Length: 177
Image (cartoon, rainbow, N blue to C red; front, side):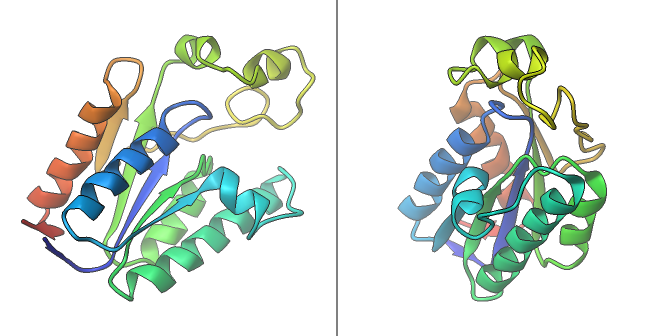
């Protein structure tokens, strides 16, 4: 498989399937010989963005940091899969404008399904007012209006979502099989 560096940016609410899709896609890409790195939002917040809160300024800083690492890796031929809520369209657009081969993937999911599958109980706590600044409940999430790929984890199995991303990458000439 031939490819240049690519940034695949998975955005969606907590529990929408970003990490699941990222891991399955990475496995498929690696099986084809690609160099792949996953930048998972939870892992980034624990390491690279430790100490940042959930204010708009802190969220923006977090997304800019992820975008910076994506640019570093992708310019060296790595396929980077960023799986981060990234709630603000302006910041996703900013990263897109500064990143070559940027592919936005919206991992959509209806709210009732997100609440049902929430094993950590975060939505329940946020809806009860126990968690402040929770994206999609007490903080906004600006859904992409024209992503390269849109998946819906309330209707698709993760493998189908990965297939949609794969098909886009091949169709756009970003992956040459």
